[in-house]
Length: 365
Ligand code: DAH
Image (cartoon, rainbow, N blue to C red; front, top):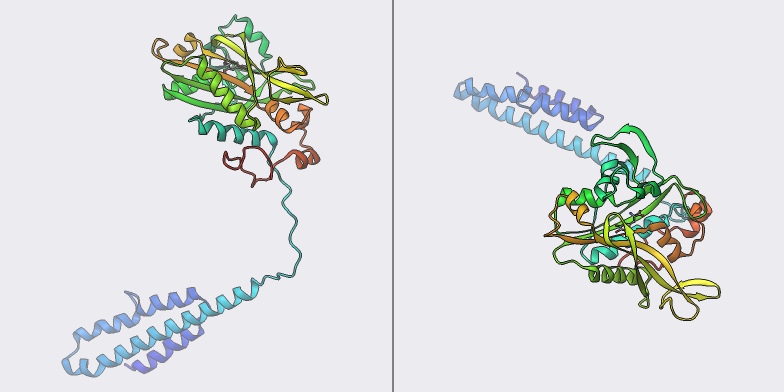
């Protein structure tokens, strides 16, 4: 057999390979396990010593030559590919910069991030629940049985579908059902906030059919109203970034808390505008209702699968849109959901403006 000729033929084919896959196919065909040159090497075993001495070096030379040719061709093709890419990827630094991205973070999203940041610092996790809720979680387990008059105050959107656990499916009217879901899923102790969308069939300058709430829930042993007041005060001072926030707790009624308190915050009238801070009883000051809260009703703790003799807690619910309006000075709630580019550009936040306690939770750079 003319090994030199075999070698030349192989080298010619390698030199003609136009891409890396062809080179690889040739490598397998020639040097692979079933390759033709590998087969030649196997013939050495059956040869006489003389034959082997004469042909062995020739076959080895053939194999080495082909191996080197494959490596060279591969390197050449790779080099050419790199050259082509470098040529195509030219960057002209003298061109004008591209337009800045137009998107912005909606104030509601920003405020929710601020809430999560402030409450995380107090050991609260963020919990969530479905916006399409069943009657039981939205009402019954929150101590509002079927005939309860408080149900009527919620202007509920009902689905035609029956809920698996009785009643009908609803668009949740508040974030409070997340209290029940979290107690059932995680037991006690608990410290959570649950921000999210809620829905009520109501629409005017201060009400939209969809709005946002944040629910708070603490379940532990020996929890009392003092914990609630401290938590709300600490949160509101951090959120509004002022130390002179003064709260007034007023007795109230919610089915899911007992006792229930409504929390007012003191404001000052400065040139006719309400500025939060100071006691509402001072001259030129007033009180503004901010949120509902209270000690979690024993019945609700039971519906959450816990023993109310062992576990107590407090809960609160705040309108997130309202918080955003108070902090960032918008006066029409409906504009929040119009999707007007000018409003969004004005009141929106940069995606890089991530609220942190160290850098400030709300003063845009
Ligand atoms: N769920 C109430 C509402 O939507 C707000 C609320 C009041 C939540 C008192 C609470 C609470 O957790 O304790 O009007």
